[in-house]
Amino acid sequence: MPHRPPTITQPTIARALREAKKQGCELIEIKPTGELLIHINKITPPKPTDNTYSIDDFPPLENEQEEYSNNKSCPSVGDIKF
Image 1 (cartoon, rainbow, N blue to C red):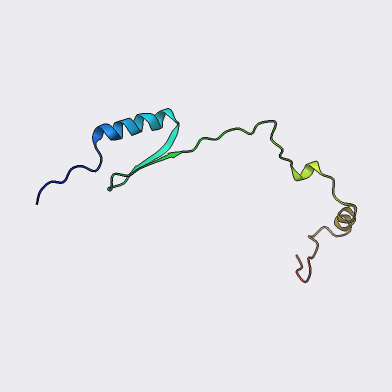
Image 2: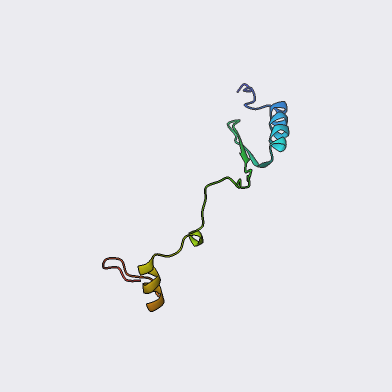
């Protein structure tokens, strides 16, 4: 049975590892098929210009405020009671 050419070579792996390390790689998988899976999990902090709000930024509606002060459990929705 003749030898088949390698699916991935050592220099290819070395290049991939170096570049992945530069990019902040978390994990590299090398499959038997020669496929390289490079997992880069960069977390970018949110910018102050993002238009994101917390639920606490908004006051409760009047009827929600009354219902909550009278009954501390979740209000029922339709036939579903909490």
